[in-house]
Image (cartoon, rainbow, N blue to C red; front, side, top):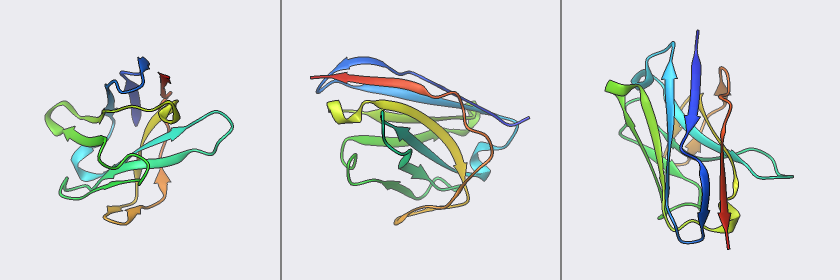
Length: 124
């Protein structure tokens, strides 16, 4: 059974940092392109960063470029999102998911299940 479990969210002041984790099971992490999504209250879910199946390509939305870093540890079957210089507008529930591809222009459609998400709240 494919499962994704996000963790690492919390309450942080603007300018602070958090590292999110996505523990994957039921499939081979480094055989899949993966994406971090987020959904803020009243807004649609958006993809903010992805990493290709080889790990050699990453993509960042303009809103997080230069502040967030995506990575993965295949030995732990875990993907990470290091978030620095956080802003109140980064407040959202963050999810990880598999996507059909990730390239320098963005990510393909999501497939498979969502995890439960992890809440990130940035206070001003």
